[in-house]
Image 1 (tube, one colour):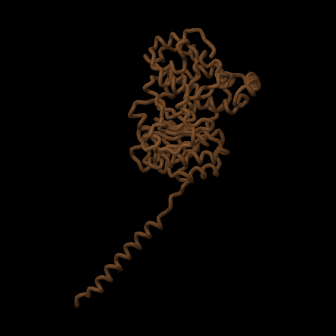
Image 2 (image 1 turned 60 degrees about the vertical axis):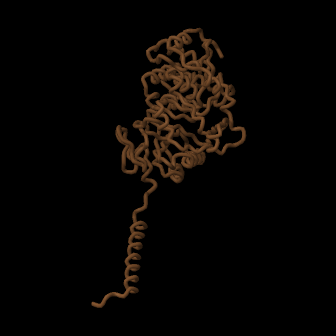
Length: 394
């Protein structure tokens, strides 16, 4: 056979290369597309022993591989209603842009009603991360067994015009749920950390690190962004019942605590609290025997319904009494706004990562933030001395 010409060789090589490209293109474009709904897990198809996500599982020892094998057992969690879809989409979109697009942590959405398909699809369209949708167990959402319906109705009427949500029954259900039940939902069973998120909030700054790992690596238990004063009318007897719980349960107290942030040296409740619409928490804290005892004591007192004890002052009181200052962290670099209050960092290295509106500097004017910086841990016997002092109204 005569040798092939150079021109023919070049033509043959080009033809073979073209066939290879065509084969690659066919494999890529004829493969089965990912069904977005396959990444949606609801409480109906989730089990308490193992929760399926895209064919993989959370178990007691492993986290599903979402493209990053270094993820902790953590998730962003929201208690939200169907009508808040657009506000929730906006929040998720910001979290994806600012942080989660680099990690792929799951989202968990909880509702006292079934989520609509519109809500599920609306959320799924703004994230590639795994998403859970769960309905609250009936026993977690409703009137406490320790209060009476008639007395609750009287309290709602009395407080209707005294403060925001003074006459709202559903708001009280939400506060009680966030205080003592959210971390007990089956979809959170295998999480070590959660980041509470809400609709219609703003995240102003890029977050170029993993806050969950920051919490773990620095042995932190509770993380916050904003510290306002609580309206005293909503928590008129919270400290009274808290100090009684301390006196009855001294063994639950650490040798040191940060109680001076919430109660001054004269045993007066400062009303300072961590605004819990944002919180990143090591869930072993809420699952602890000490916290459960505290929540049950408060629930029996009835203040979630007869007053309007919010989960923010409850979480804050518990954290200050049961934790040390070094276990609590201000995420100063996470610029954040919840309707009513917004704050951004003023340190140049932090501010360079943020796009903030004018006057978003609440935390640098906050009385509670100044107190947070000024006070330190006190010893257990000193905390108990405060608890034994006569209750004084703020």
